[in-house]
Length: 154
Image (tube, rainbow, N blue to C red; front, side, top):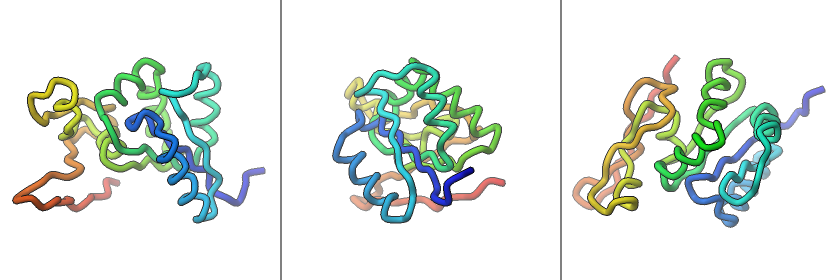
């Protein structure tokens, strides 16, 4: 029998699974009446089956912000990118996130990750391709952060 509480899985790969970030997300979602677990790919070792169990447990998969490029490399190493695509195709969980965690669902997105990797400039980075469109999480114009409107795709 399924719990009355929603199950939220936080994936903090882009922030190198920062403990404070995981604690803050856990506190926030718990205050909303959810059960929360995290998939910490940069700080823990998992067998493939354990990753599958965590992903299948989740009603909501929330991906945190940080370094998009490093996140995608880590996900590919563990096959998490493909596992998330399967969840998307089955429509078996709500997939959401912020910054790198928003870019990850799209074909590619504008990210400052490239600048931290080669110090040249902000560039586009490739993501999972679940949504075959470009995503720009935010940008700066005249020293103001501009957050574009989000669209719901049916």
